[in-house]
Image 1 (cartoon, rainbow, N blue to C red):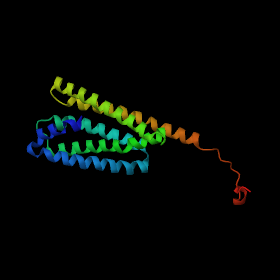
Image 2 (spheres, rainbow, N blue to C red; image 1 turned 90 degrees about the vertical axis):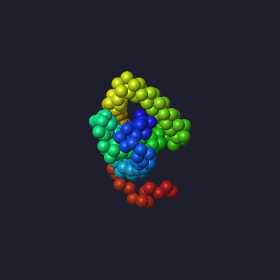
Image 3 (cartoon, rainbow, N blue to C red; image 1 turned 60 degrees about the horizontal axis):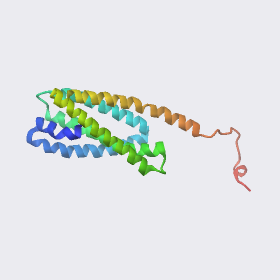
Image 4 (cartoon, rainbow, N blue to C red; image 1 turned 180 degrees about the vertical axis):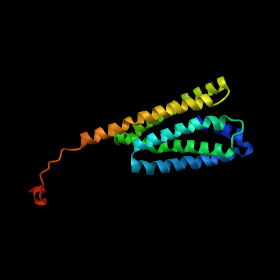
Amino acid sequence: MVIGSAKGLAKASMGEMAFMVVAIMSVGNAAGRLIAGVVSDKIGRATTLTIMLGFQALLMFAAVPVLGGTDSSPVLVVLLVTFMVFNYGTNLSLFPSFAKDLWGAKNLGMNYGILFSAWGVGAFVLVRVSQMMVVKTGSFDQSFNAAGILLLLGATLSMTMWKKKAVTATAASPVMDTEEYEEEDLIEN
């Protein structure tokens, strides 16, 4: 929704300087990929996804007054769109890793292809829904609010992955005997 509308949104507030938004968006997208990778290595993928979805929801709600006003600040528009695309980049960093973690490496290409295709179909459908809302109301306000609510729902659902990982880790760990062994005892003869 944001990427497809960024040019029009930027042009409305920045005029002829709107082309700069596209360049800045690519920097935000790349930074999102790098930073999400580093953060997910530190705090976990599910936690990173939950934080990013929550942050994206806040940006959607912030977009209503920033982009809906007649006196939109070009700086605020650029920052808002850059952080929105930053979060888009985080998804592109996290989803392949989730596909491997959840379904294994054996069919990673097929599984990620299905996941990525589902993401694309969702984007296509929701962009159309957003456009219908804009035509009906004359503004992006309902679209941004609906996207914010869906992102909060996604953040809530991503928290279920925390529990799954904890259960999986517990179930997968073997029961260790508390008896101590000497190194010689562990070597097979």
